[in-house]
Length: 250
Image (tube, rainbow, N blue to C red):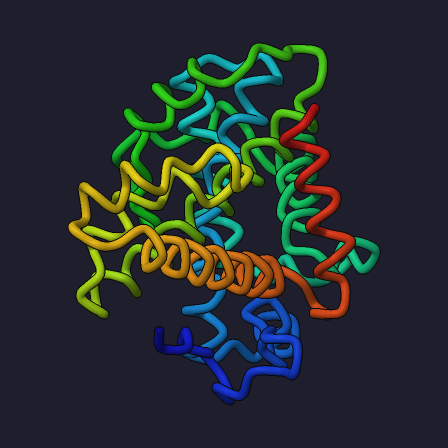
């Protein structure tokens, strides 16, 4: 399968993670934003906005107020320089984004000045209906908005990885294989009914075993790369992966 696009040099590191990540690009840009850094930040926000919505809802805000708060936060976040003053969280986009939201909720949002939904400048098109449906499917944990944020972040990251893998399979003419094998990416070997999958794909069982193995390998590489894109230092991937696995297990 083809390598994924790097927004900067396009040179993958030896461990499969890009030398320059999207988050590093945004940090390096500082006050002098560039089309590449702006696009990198927009992609990160577009992918990982829902965990902020889940956090605000867990804080006790209504659906409507949560929509207003998150939308207003992103309008300000993308317009102003939020990369200063939070140096302890700059290494991880996940931590930085949540710290920025907390700062915004505490100090930078005045309900009396709130714009009506649908008014003003909109920098991100967010699927509020889907967000509310997802929120009600999440396990209830009103005592820990931070834990809800981390769990939603981990799920959003996995969704992004699966989407990337699906797109690669479709481009390679292996859409049917992906649809049949995607449920096996995170379960044990013994749980995979290879014979049934082989019959449905009109392949022999050995070929299916090899295909699933390769799909899993690619999934793991994409997972590490997606995590790296949200870190300043790709060397922190293993630590961040453990944190996200813990969030899913909580």
